[in-house]
Length: 240
Ligand SMILES: C[S@@+](CC[C@H](N)C(=O)[O-])C[C@H]1O[C@@H](n2cnc3c(N)ncnc32)[C@H](O)[C@@H]1O
Image (cartoon, rainbow, N blue to C red; front, side, top):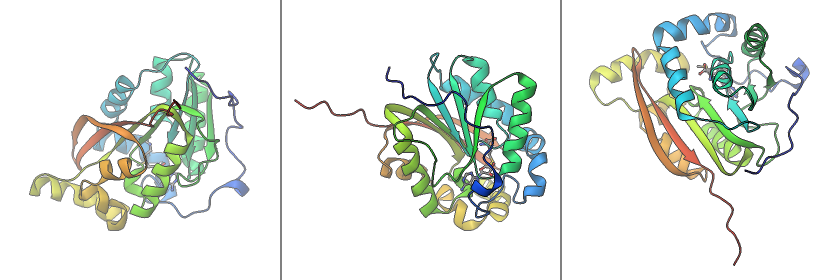
């Protein structure tokens, strides 16, 4: 399995001067509410079940490098690390407040996570650096053009054959689901949630140059259902 030389530790959080700016939608719309995200997510979208399912779907090998884009408070990274403590875990998020919480949770768990303040649309990692990339509940924070950029960045940092696991709100199938999804659309913006509402995420994943896109889980929540997709960066073509 090809491994890319990455530092096992990046400095935990870049200085505020290197932060990507405030052109992002925080987890709960206002950064002041970020400390409440874990509690709200546990109650509102059964976050424990979601993260457990994601960890089930992404077995990692010792030494492999995994990046969570829009990692927020680090819940998924810590869950993945419980399953495979010998993998290397990286998280990128635009919100330094969320990363500070992730760093505290990691310290409490005795875990080493390399956390970086970064925009999903400009990931500060080399090409083909990761065996796996996850992104959970980030895409509905990004306008469609940003979704495209973020997915292109994810493809770039995945090694050929590397896996993407993406979870986000999917198109409502009934008027009740449309109604349930409305608070998310009001909260996070109609522009950012439009591609979700139209069921376009798999098309965007494919347009970014990823292949073998599979729907591997659908989790109903009080705000509509969350779909988990798996995809792969095409393996390099061996010249004849
Ligand atoms: C709903 S939270 C999900 C957090 C985490 N992935 C989880 O599932 O628990 C969305 C996260 O995306 C981050 N985010 C929003 N826009 C971003 C961007 N342009 N680049 C990086 N992160 C972004 C927010 O700061 C927030 O932490």
